[in-house]
Image (cartoon, rainbow, N blue to C red):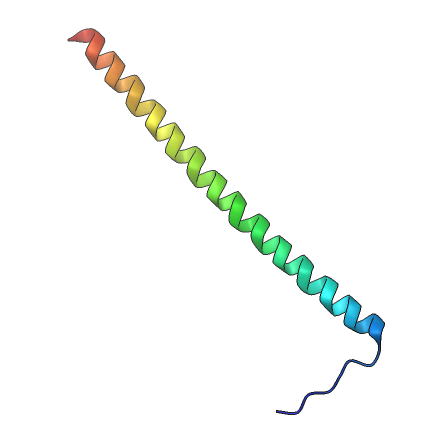
Length: 59
């Protein structure tokens, strides 16, 4: 494999900044997805607790 250095420090800096931006976007996406999953789980748990309380009050 032949590697060629980037022509200028400015290009190297731009490449590093873009890599950091992509990494940050990836983490943002991951945490957004995790938050949505936790929210759905909490909603299901709340619905289950309401059902349980309703059945307990009937019986």
